[in-house]
Length: 249
Image (tube, rainbow, N blue to C red; front, side, top):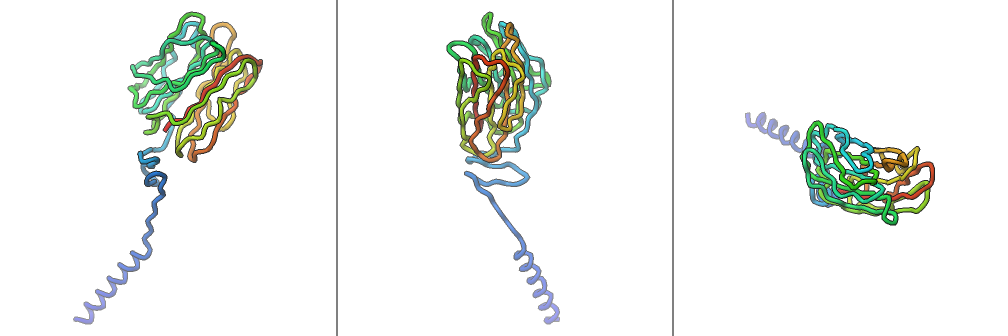
């Protein structure tokens, strides 16, 4: 009996040692642990996979106006890009939110580009975005919302303008962390046949009509590795333009 029990004990011990020998544990750290199939921690804060909920873009007329509605349910970061011949006075949304102006530039007091953000916004299935402005401002707007826990702060930004060109870069930025969202917006004036390089996905591409609204080209880039980025927006018919870029962490 003792021999049988001893053999069983040795067998169980051997199986336990074998299992312990084949178990593998790994942890990738970028300012904190990274877990596959779960939240990824970058810079000490948790971030989930980044995905677009929805987007909407419209020309709003000479005195601003309101975009078409879009289902933004589930979003926790919304970005609004605006192009306008003259300065705008405010932006808002329905449901109501408090919008933060992250970047703006212009060409000698005209051809304005704006980049606004709201983190943890109130959203619904028919969300709209409103830009208010004085007359003869010629506004276009593009909004995109994401369902990621990033975006509470602006990380890097840059801007540029030109008196006359058929393409423009906002200036290079290098996000401080992996897995940031980069947004680029260009006021293309009266330009047509708009495009943006650098791997950006357009969430707004509206050619200016030269009378009642500015052109706008807006795109986003979701980076998995932090690398320098400086997209080129191109269009036909050279003219004044301005551009902004920002990354969100």
